[in-house]
Length: 296
Image (cartoon, rainbow, N blue to C red; front, side, top):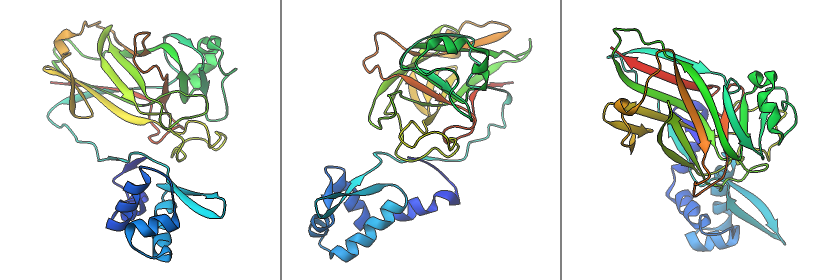
């Protein structure tokens, strides 16, 4: 589940602000339990436990189903990510470019694969030829199993500009027919033919609907990904603020006109769970593929 520092998610934080509910979550992380068994485990009455469970269910952390005559609770999410407001780097000037998800310039993909716009699928699903169709430019979400997608982003740096840092921001997930919240995939990110590293997406999420995902998308189809920030500096590359690889700005080759950004599921990947890229009108962020060049 993806959340932000916003009043829209305050009920999620309230639901977690209880020792009893935290204990319930820990118990449910091991197995599904009936209300009666949960009541015995936490030492409270079934009525009180039911009220705690309802608060967790209201924010989609758990869900209920029937097993015979018993009402059974189970977890719907295995992680909650909180996105804090972005830090503003006033020290540097910034060239920012945002490329629509469908504006890729090179590809080699294998099914399952496809493209979707705010109004429906683009062409036929699982047919790679539609990745060359002009209507791909309308895509707000693309997905594929094996292979890669490449984007070209402009290099607006001038002769006297000194590049200090590059940020690549994108909402990513795995790819599974329909969806699978536990479906790891090693997604390799390269810039100017230099591999920055790979990130293991934990799944292809449909536990809750994406904040911007169109109404026509069924509930059991991938709804959102995780927004990741890949930062290249003069001393290494960071993923969401944490050290990720030793690739630095000096390791990149530079074209005076463009940057080439690739997302790839490599044949040698340990987890070959595909890739989904979310852009405008899909997922949780209503943003496409972004590149920020910080310079002096």
